[in-house]
Image (cartoon, rainbow, N blue to C red; front, side, top):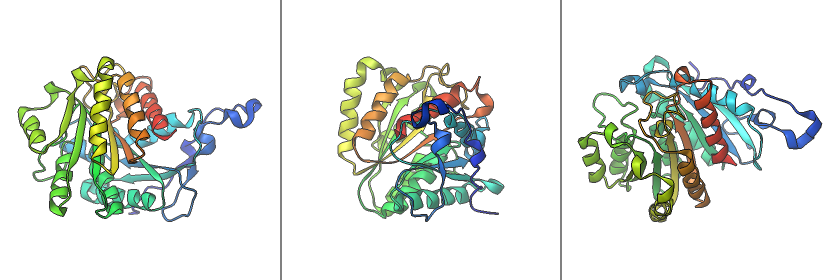
Length: 314
């Protein structure tokens, strides 16, 4: 089987407003196909991780494997405001439920994009995507510089890997890999729901030196403190990897996830934090995880995911 699914440019269709010329362009007018190794102008490379095997193993509701294509369809009609090119690099799938192999293929793809000066934006898939995304950055950097992971998430995803990896284990896997290669593990989790994480997970986060903020503290009046905390975290890092588990958002905004939030964190809080992370100049890689189109309502979740892609790339 081929390593990567063919790039389906037929997904990039949308409204045309010829009366307004170049100022009326949308994403579907601008996205180009990308092949690893091509010497294109540096820009954004969209990579899909069409896999929810980790969600199944974590006893969640499957369906996130269809997210990359669903997000592309909504993104296609989004108004274009970027000054750099965007490429579609196709999808990595998970044939035969071989998650380790899928992680390896995604890592190769992410590293190839980074090697050519692109900004990879990975569209998951379950949050098992995180280990593949990080592995690609790790491969590209080859031990050069300190990597910080910023995770917007209701869950720590620090479960110990027993027989198999899952959507609940990626950051523990990364911590193990960091220990094995003698590099520091810098990880922060913002939006943690106390009711969704056991005492064992909080203890593990503490033992690993994880800075976390509970969902109840992720409010607009606390933004100055949150920005200050982010600054302190970012100052210790040379490179940043941002991962957004969409179940961090309120269920009313993000119904299309395996585990909708009882409370969640508003976009009005998350968006300025994303802008602050981007303004640091250290962001090398980002991904979105856990969108499940089979659970969506009137494409509400897909529209939010497309908005976040826009914010991460503009």
